Image (cartoon, rainbow, N blue to C red):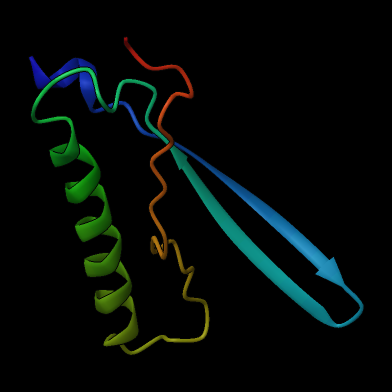
Length: 83
């Protein structure tokens, strides 16, 4: 049942201004609130990204580390209500 809810789409945006470069990773889960345990795939993804960064940071080659960690999670509530 949770296989349908674990579809996370990740997109990276690169912003450059003068000498400053910023990479923002955007993850989207379209079916986040469709079931009770919909937060588990998102939490597993966040944990996996932190674990991967930790493994890369403690390794021998730290020059080409790609940071894909999640720094912020947003949940948007629809503007319509009931009643």
